[in-house]
Image (tube, rainbow, N blue to C red; front, side, top):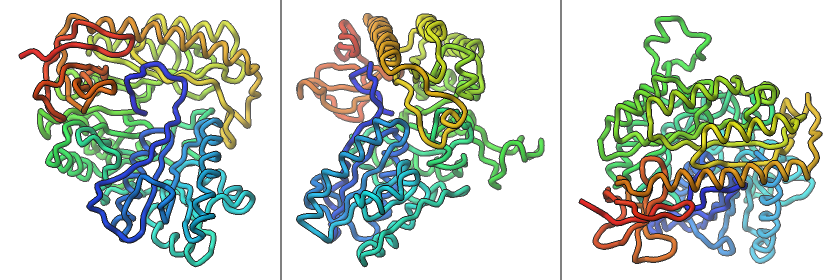
Length: 478
C-alpha cells in the first residue's frame, strides 16, 4: 500500500485509473482500474503488458473503452461494496456500446464468480490472479457472447518472464513482485484462498527487472510480496520443510536477495513490503544497515497488541516476540521509520485486550499505520471457528481511539525530522504548488522544498526547518 502525504488513514482501498504512454496505438482501447494493495497495482501492470502485446492501447476514459477491467480487493467488506458500485457505473458503457466488455480481475474474482457472471450479470469476464496469461483467449470467448472465466490458482505462476508495463507511474519509483501467494493462514485473511500458496520468483529475473528499470531512469524499486521475509529460491520449487541441509545452504533467502538488488547500483534505492514479524530476521536488519541505498523503513503489521488475540488470529508470534523485533530494529537501525497494520474489534476482543494494543502503540510510536475495524471474510478460519461478537459501535469507538493515538504519534515522529538534513529522491511537484517539489527520505516521510533547478529523479539534501503534522518542509543545501 502506498504511503502518501496523508499519514493517518483508516481506509485501504484506492481506486486508480491507470494509463500508459500514448505511443501504444492498438485499435482496441483498454481501461484498467485497480483497488487495494500494491500487489494488485503490480498485477495490473502485468495485465497491461499481456494485452498491449495483443494490440490494445490504454485509455483513462472508461466511456470510450472496448474493454474495462477492475482489479479487485477482497480484504474487507467495504472494499467489495465499492467495487460492486463501480461495476454498476460501467453498465452505461455497455448500454452505449453493446460490444464493450467488462471484467473483474484479482481477489474478488474467485470468491464471487457466480454472483458476478450469473446472478447479477454485472460482468462478461472473471479472471483470478494466476490466470492473466489466459486473458486473450477469454476475451475471444466473451466477444463470441460466452461468459468467460478462469480462476484456477497455480503453484508455479510468478509471471517472471513478463516485463510489466509501468502504469500511472512517476517515472522514478516502481514495484517488483518477488513472491506470489501466502502460506501463513492468518485466521482473518482471505489471501491464501484468493491468491494461492506462496512461491518465490527466480532471483535472476528480479535483478534483470531492477537493472532494466534503472536503465530507464527509475531510481527506486520496492520489492513486493505478501510476506517478503519468507522469500526463498531453491531453484527447484521445493518448500523449506522439504530441503536437505545442503539445499538450504545453496538456496537464496530474502536478506541475500536484498543485498544483490542493493549492489546493482548505489543510486538505486531499495524498499520492500510487506514483512511478517515471525519471519523478520536480524540478518535482514544487518543488510539494511550495511547499505545506504536500502531505505531505513519497515512495514511490520502487528494487528493486535494482545497475545491472546494474536493467537486467535493465528499470527505465529506473541506481544513479547513483536516487541523484541521492535527492539532489534531500533538497535540495529536506530533511525528506522516503522509502520504497521492494526485491526480493532477482532472476535472476542475484550476492553483489556484492546488497551494492550493501545499500550503497544505507546511503546513503539509508529510513523504511520493502516487501521481497520475487523470485517469477517467468507472461507476464513475466523468465520468458521469464531463469532464476530464485538458490537459495531464498540469497534468504531476502539478504531477511533487507535486513529487518534496514531495521529498524535505521526505528528511526534514527523517533528523529530525538523532541524536535520535529509537525503531526498525527487518524485515530482508538490500537491499544493508547482513552485515546490516533493520526494521522500529514507524513512518514507514526504519532504517538500522549493523547485529551483531540480527535477524528478534527482537526489538532493534538504535541511528541514518546519513541518506540518505529516510533511517535512525545508530547502536544498549542498
